[in-house]
Length: 131
Image (cartoon, rainbow, N blue to C red; front, side, top):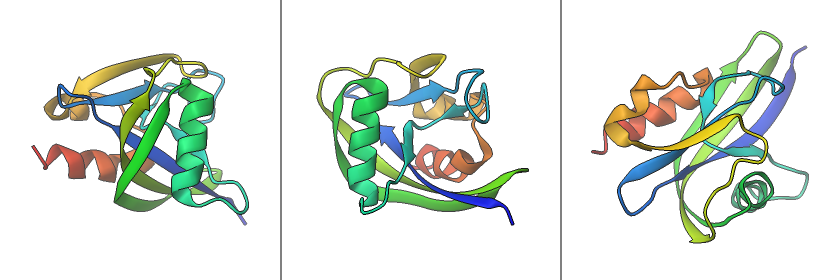
């Protein structure tokens, strides 16, 4: 049986209507794919709590978590991931890539030009339609 992983991702939008995107480093699972930053939900955590903690750890900034955008389950070759994505706003600091190879702010209509991890694509499609 494949390992199942429950993760959360943040769709962080700035005042210029740009979305924060992070590229996975070559050392990470699913290397070189773009994603909405986030991570695994630990035992006893809410998705929102996990997301705030992961963003603090991975990007050294504080967010407020807003409405849920998408809940996707995707079967990769070696594992199954359930990804819940939430809208989020920066409360304190600017995101700094600690683990990721690259990060950038991207206009909504340019999101589809990035090579997103498959589990992130339904959320990408949903927010591109919101323009």
